[in-house]
Length: 280
Image (cartoon, rainbow, N blue to C red; front, side):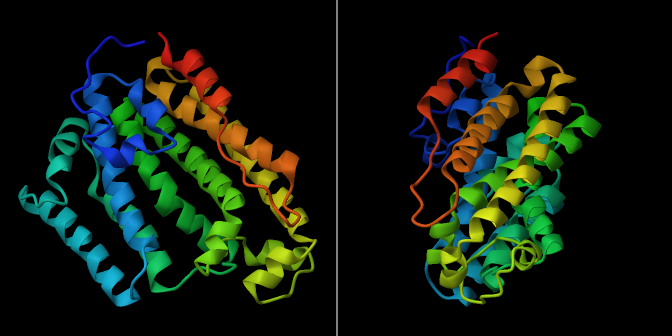
């Protein structure tokens, strides 16, 4: 494992330290690690705006401040307290403004109206903005070539986001959200329009298992892309994929019939991922 000393500690970037991805970021070389901490902190901040209580108007205004600050940073180089830690990573790794804006756009989708059984194309757009855009920022920091990096971001971002959706259906329902696609519900014969009714329907298990199979294919494609890439460039995403695929497989084994036992990451899986991909 890298012997370099952190320039940022968990206390410096508490959002990163509490992340499921912390171990995957922790094994990176110092400059990459610091850049990822700050990118993650930005993503966590805008995500918190979308999920925190308060009126939609107030949350949207808070989110727009981030949009304005990002646009100002790229146009003039001027920073604000919200963007000052991004200046070095942007310049060092060529991070694109469009990807930061896409992350904001994804959070905006949760603020303007709570997503409830969106069409597949809307859900795919949400996954691209909320997860794959983060991946596009990350692969530049990891040092991947552009084409495989974009392909990995597309596939792994969707795999991770769909895993979150399948894991968090009850937590999301408490916020008035249901990310399961309308077409999948309809195909399973679920015509209930209430979230509680949908989550109590025995056919929900069929819906979620179908989405889980799609998610597995995204992981398979991601693993094929990473297998062809330089090992150093994909250490972190391989660890993320290992941990989150483990969560998906635990969800599949558990099923989605009510009542659902909470499923979280396995410490054993995290340790295995670190041993496999974190040591070089």
